[in-house]
Image 1 (cartoon, rainbow, N blue to C red):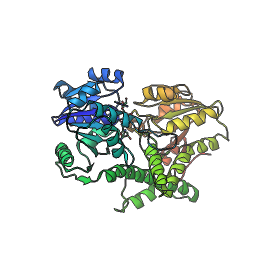
Image 2: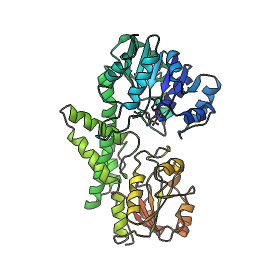
Image 3: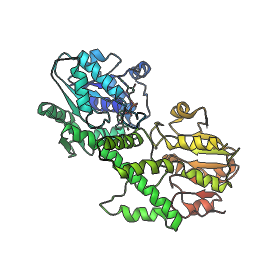
Image 4: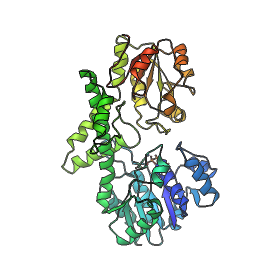
Length: 438
Ligand code: NAD
């Protein structure tokens, strides 16, 4: 089949490449010329494991095209995926400008029947708006389908190739059948394609992300309570995670959720719920609690240093919002850096893959060093913000030599309090007995 993917970011590029990998011809469109130029040369514009290889392979086989010419892409395609960003507007609602701009372009260019697929995360009712926008420009028949994407950055290729499920919201049988056929190669091991109406599919994506954000936040609060009452969150986590109704995932406490999806999707669902006269109180609390959680580690820092960090060198390991990505959108490291800088600390950051994106986001407020140990030279404290694997077994002896004060704040509980104490560090973590020398 001939497909177009509009928007070549984290979702669009993975979607386009994986769909090309099953033999389709995919035209990837973006308004960002420099992105398209790079992709044409076979250079990746994001860090995503496994993507480079299949992008190269499908480029070489001529199944992938990269262009800024949306008109020609639409004319030559049977199915058009909209994968543009839907950031938060000032009132928390999802900003649909890019989605509707893409819809208008499609409407202007189409000459025969098309399936238009909303893959961007969009609020209930958006397919209808897309339909109206397209209809302004054409009388030709088309269908709008909702096909939310559930891939995780860092595992995006694997998730797309072997999804837990594919959700397709289609109000037309013709479009439903074509979409099912398109996804058939990806669900051969038995994962379901869950068919539903368009509105249910649109809501499913928000419900999934909001439930995950709620689980994270609940566990963060349990960790905070553990500290007050002398319990160990690791044990509590294992104790509840073994219950099949709860499951072991998303139970690790941390410095709050961030990223390109959870924060904005929680805000958008809260907005939709309020607008619909059915406010979601639990979710409203999740959002507030998460904001607080992002800087809870700073309370520990201040407490250790007697209330002031002025002039201290504080190093952050891990800046991306999670491991295995270079995505810095709404990363907790940004909040932590801003707050520490405002308190007079000198902040230095290191990340295995996100130095470039971090430079854009906060290059003006913190020093970025491309070596995890060099960053530590002369440090008064280390805060572990993002749990990249390479941080799990570092050279602690070298760290001790390099740091001016041996103080570690572990925002992801990756090290053991006993071990850290025996190595001679003051070690603070989340929801576990702290074992400090102080
Ligand atoms: P992104 O910002 O990485 O990519 C969006 C791309 O769209 C950019 O390259 C931008 O230049 C391009 N674009 C904007 N307007 C355009 C237009 N009119 N025509 C052509 N291109 C245009 O965003 P993303 O992370 O890929 O997210 C895209 C959507 O997918 C969002 O709605 C997001 O919520 C959803 N989503 C994201 C993830 C994720 O992990 N990133 C997962 C599931 C769903």
